[in-house]
Image 1 (tube, rainbow, N blue to C red):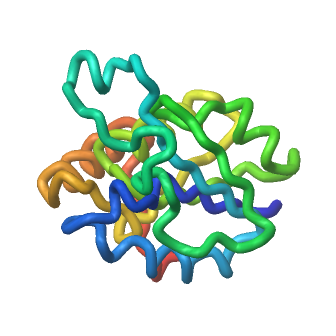
Image 2 (image 1 turned 90 degrees about the horizontal axis):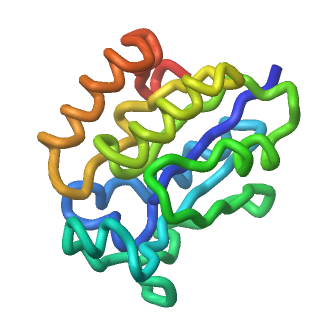
Length: 165
């Protein structure tokens, strides 16, 4: 079986103070995986992020949606407007023998968490969270809360560090 890396939203709009270390880390991680998928979030108008949360970042056409690292040429890029990566897009981007998906990126408490849970619930994939390759652009407290929630949602053994690869 081959393994895949899912890089969630390491884009200019999220690679700020608390997540500024992510671009270098994820760029280096790509070489350890047979398949790489990167996602980028685009905030449509209208959207619940705009209407309910009053969050208007990552507008289509803005620099916020550009990736903050160099993607390997063989990687697939998925653009989405949801917390979780759509499962049909993941399945279409990977060969049938891929079951293990290692997840890194931003935001641990939101899109990383929701994508991992969606993969887990699909019963098609086994998600692993690379904890030291994730961050929350809103701060360390939300990153840690996301990891704690993920322990309960997908299993403590699914939370790993880069050295465990």
